Image 1: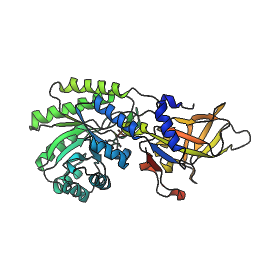
Image 2: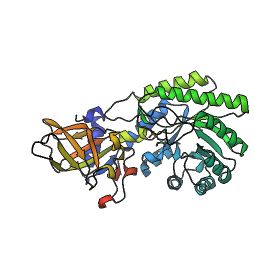
Image 3: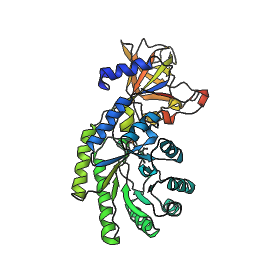
Image 4: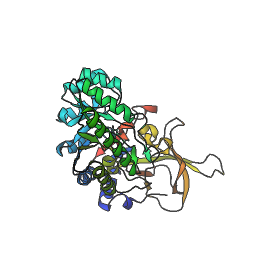
Length: 387
Ligand SMILES: Cc1ncc(COP(=O)(O)O)c(C=O)c1O
C-alpha cells in the first residue's frame, strides 16, 4: 500500500518539506524543525513531571540539539564524541547522563572531568571502573525488561541485568563510595505494548522498597527510557495514551511518594519530523514472467536504512505517480546482496513507476543519518537538511 501524506503530515508541513526536497539531489533527509519542536512540546506536556534526556543517537543534528538546549532539556549521551558535541554547544556536563553501560575507564574519567555526574551501569566490572574514574558519582542501574516481542526494535537483551543483580550493584555502589541514585530500563524501541512499562515499574518499585528496608539505601530516580512511538505503517496508540497509562502505573506503585522521573526519548521526538527522499534507479523483473518487479532506489541499508534489517521498521512510502499498483521488492543501490530493504513485506507501487521518479519515505528523522556508512561502494553519507 502506498501511504498518503495527509495521514502523516498536515498539508502545509508536507508542502514545505516536499518543495524544499524537490530542489535537492537524492538521497537526502529533509528534517522539519517545527515538527520536531511540536513533538517535543507534546512529550513535555504529556509528562509534565518528568525530565527529558534526549537520546542523541537518534539524530544528532546541531539544529535539533540547539532546540533541546534552549528548552532546558538534558541529554542521554552514548560516547565521548556525543559529549563533545553537546559541550561545544554550551551545554554543561550537569545536563548529561552517560547512558551507555558499555564504556572504557578513560571515557568515564573524561565525562567526570567534564562535569558529568550521572552514569548508567549494569555490571560489576563497569561499576568498579566508575568508582575509580568518577569517585562519588551518582549511578543508576539498568534492569532487564520484557517486551522484546512487542517492540519493533528490541534493546533489552544486550543491556540491563536481573533484579537480583541490580540489588547487588546498588549495595556495591554505596560500598564503593558512589551514590546509588536510581534504576533505569528500556522496554525496546517503538514499543507497541504499553503494559510492558507496568511490569518494569513494578520491578523498580520492588527494588526501591527492598533496598530501603533491608539496606537503608534510598533511591531517588526512575529512568523510564525510550520506546515511545513514531508514526510508521503499523500504527500505535498515541503518545497521550502512553503517558496516561504510564502515569497511572507510576501512581499505582509509588502513590504520593513519586521519585524523580527521567525519560530518554529518541525516536518519538525525531522520527516524524524527517522525510527521506530517494530516486528510483531501476525497475526490473528477474524473468519474463516474474511476479514481482524489483525497484532499486538510491537509498539502501548502508545509506541509513539499517532499521529495515529483518524488515523491522516499515516506513510509510509515497510516490507521486498514481494508477494501478503491484507488489514489489525494494532494494538499495550497493553491490551487496544484503542491501534489500523489503522482500517479505510487499509495498505496492504503481506499474508506471520508472527510473528517475522520486520516493518519499515518511517518519525517517530518527536512526537514519547516524546509521549511514561513510563510504560503502563509494556512496557518501546521507545528507540532512534542517528546515
Ligand atoms: C539508553 C538508551 N536510551 C534511550 C534510547 C532511545 O530510545 P527510543 O529511540 O526508543 O526513544 C536508546 C536507544 O537505543 C538507548 O539505548
